[in-house]
Amino acid sequence: MENSQPEGQDGAATGQVEDAVLIKRGLRKVRRRRWLLWSVMIIYLPTMWITQQVTHSFNKSLPVFFGWCLVLLTAMAISAVVRCPRCGNYFHVNGMSLLYLRRCLHCQLHIKADRDLP
Image (cartoon, rainbow, N blue to C red; front, side):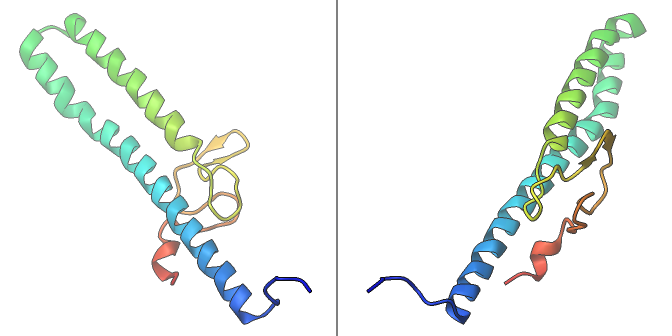
């Protein structure tokens, strides 16, 4: 005699709950990485303003600008390679296109779809 659970509503419900938990975790990760990118972009203006106030020179503020560009590229790379929790493809990348839309470019899962899940 086997000691396995029969295929029924209990197994399906457990699978749905596990899927919901994975989708919630995955979408939380997508949102965190998007916030990282937005934070780096928002930091640009105050950083450059402070640098200009301190150095009073365009040439002396260039290293700060290039450092910010490096941080921006890193944040873009980190946010671009996050995977969709439903389909497993990159959430923001389709082929050579990097688009920061609110839906997965492959399965159209919305960034806030976990709010409707149990």
